[in-house]
Length: 116
Image (tube, rainbow, N blue to C red):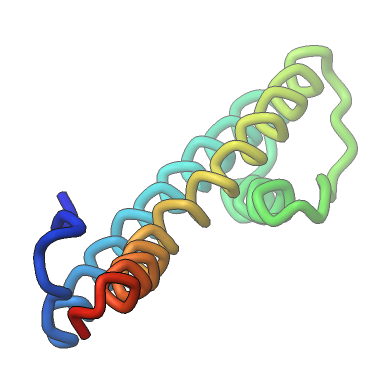
């Protein structure tokens, strides 16, 4: 996936393409997560799609739910979605920053070997 430590650092233009690709991956993960939350809140709590999107956006960013959950099913969905959202948040950060950290560590390794 990434170049090995013995390979030279890729050119900046290639790095920007790689970073954009990983931005798309992390955005896709966030989009799918928002869709799951929107549909779940709309189904379990009978909220409109806009209100479901609003609730799922607030949960996904760590702000918390907006509407009170009134049914047992909606409370269970909201609980599991909150747990899922925490994992998605951390995964999204890891996916987005992977090329940045790799380039930095690759640069440090080349500096250590005296190649650059």
